[in-house]
Amino acid sequence: MMLLSELENDALVEIFNIGVGQAAASMGALVNEEVTMSVPSISFLNRAEAAQLLGGKGNGGERICGVSQYYQGAFSTEAILMFPEDKSLEIVRLMVGEAVPLQELTEMEQEAMSEIGNIILNSCVGTLANIFQHQLEGSLPQYHVGTSEEILAASGSAAGTVVLMLHIDFILEKHQIHGYVAFVLDVSALHDLKGQINAYLDRSLGQA
View 1: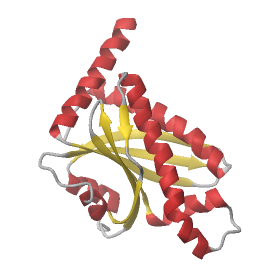
View 2: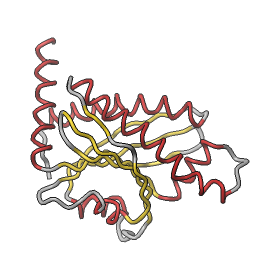
View 3: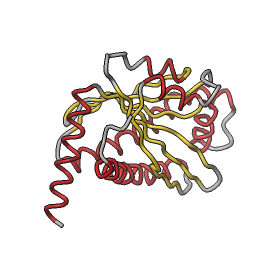
View 4: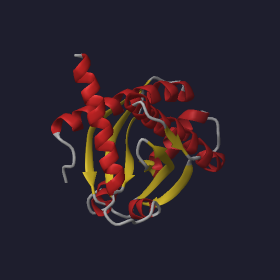
């Protein structure tokens, strides 16, 4: 499912790399460790394909930790940050330190992951808003744990929706964690997103 031209796709990857670069700096301050992030690829998938990608081949039952926020403005979308559940605890452990017992760590997981989700999603979406020169207003973050199918299903099932998947590599000094950000888009939102990308490209090429 290819919904953007090569030029549009490259522009979107470039924009998201700016956003996750800002998120990496904020996360580094939280975990007291240098964090680098990159978006090596984006893809447009239907819900079933996105769930399979998140669950891993033959392992669709793996539990995923997700943080979601709704955004409206330049285009409407639900953005969801997702990690394997075991990796989310690893990230929380980095935030709070080694001395916290596992039981307390688990109790803190929802609040800590919601904070991380808020940082990463708002960095990505805020960069889009700045570059598109249009506002995108977000809701409060919501925390989910379940299979990839359950988390994606929680975002609703409007006909014709596609999932824009960002594969994000998080590289910390002693850890390497792979996560995903999914943007759930209906046909209208996808049209709006393409329009915003092309307006940005027109501005950029006009200044070149």
